[in-house]
Length: 338
Ligand code: DAH
Image: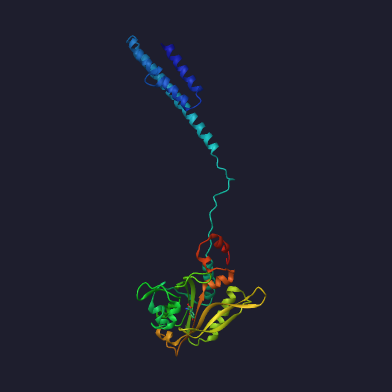
């Protein structure tokens, strides 16, 4: 009996020793330790023994079972560790593989122009003001000296949402809002933002575009101050060699009014001028409505076309490029001005 036990033990341990993978270990387990396995069957032999021998034999079988189980467990651990090491080796990270490229965006050319203009005016002590795009008729027109029947309204016809509200046609209403907020104190502001007009879109027109409004109110403000600041702005944006040209014009909210052109060198080498903004001295009616005594205060104002600046600066042939989000267009402005 004892010999039989020893034989089973040897066979089992040898099978384990030779086992090359987990499934072979599993079959050793089946062969010896399952319900009908060789070791379990030995227990059945107990019945055939003399009762006095049974306890000792039972103990030996149990001992055998424990030893085989332990050996099986040990071998399983070894194989599992080997498998882990092998898979770690295979899955080694290749640090020389190229990484996933992150697409790097850039600041929109119109925002680059706005930031550039802001930098210039902040340096002169101006504040940046804001106003709503859905504006009240009162601020957009009336406080800008365009009453209900004013013919100049037709030039800026726009999108009304009801009797009194519209998408602002220019950033000028921010002049009125700022004057009221400053309650008669001197002020210097610029206000960049979107404006809307009922234009048909073509290479030079867009129903939505951007402006930067400027307003200065103080004592002793003269037209020369306006001309000075606009020349310096043009030279800041385009270069020291640039000149500006003022042409008489008409805006209901300024008197006198001008249109301002910036010089550029034409293909044939001669000097040309391109209009970039409207400006003038603040009309006494506008000052009065804003709470300033025109006998005490003067002011100047201007409205810059942001697209026009960008078109001139970057030689762009169609205003619609700015709004189409075509990366082939936008990517060209990466790092410009930075
Ligand atoms: N609001 C005018 C426009 O949209 C531009 C403008 C002209 C603004 C003269 C001004 C100004 O402040 O003084 O056409």
